[in-house]
Amino acid sequence: MRSLTTCFGRCDCLAWCSQWWSVRASRSLINAFAGAVIGFAVFVADDDEIRSVTFWSLGTLGLATWKAVGVVIPLALLGMLACVRFSRVLDTLSLGDRSAAHLGVRVERVRLQAIAVVGLLASSAVAATGMIAFVGLLVPHIMRLVLGPRHRHLLWTSGVLGASVTLLADLAARTLLSPAELPLGVVTALIGAPFFLLLLRSTRRSQGGWA
Image (cartoon, rainbow, N blue to C red; front, side, top):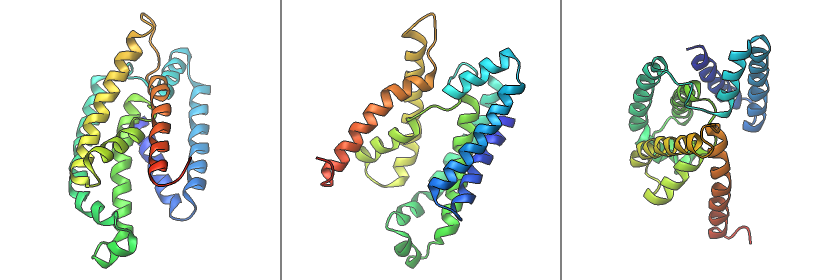
């Protein structure tokens, strides 16, 4: 629960700071502070706790417990219900802030609410499994290419496919170097980074960028 509170607080702090400073500056500020907190936790931890923190920072499902599942599932369900509620408004926001405002959307209010929902979903997952790279970045892009931009279908299918990709990556992490286990975040980064670069290159080419 403490890790969940920390992760959610980090997301909320980033959202709040981004209202006043640039997103890049906000991210750097929160990352520096969170890194200091994690560093202090490692400093005061014993050997077993240091090992757990190390695996958590690299991403792993091995530290997940039924207690954590009992906390994450209700939050995930609430988050998914909120995503369904926001789907039509997010479609309108895709037209741009000015167009959405003319259509009656309270842009800043909706944006903050959406950030809170995303923070809830992301923090619950990260608190239980650690920092698993590229799944949340790559899967929605793929689903948008397949299904189009409508959020009604895009949100829940991205969640289902993201969970499936995570399970497959965890299976690979447990079996590739058996009996040793690779950190899950390492596997997703090794696969996801080149794939995302290819996807980005293809998108830029279709828009007339990058030779």
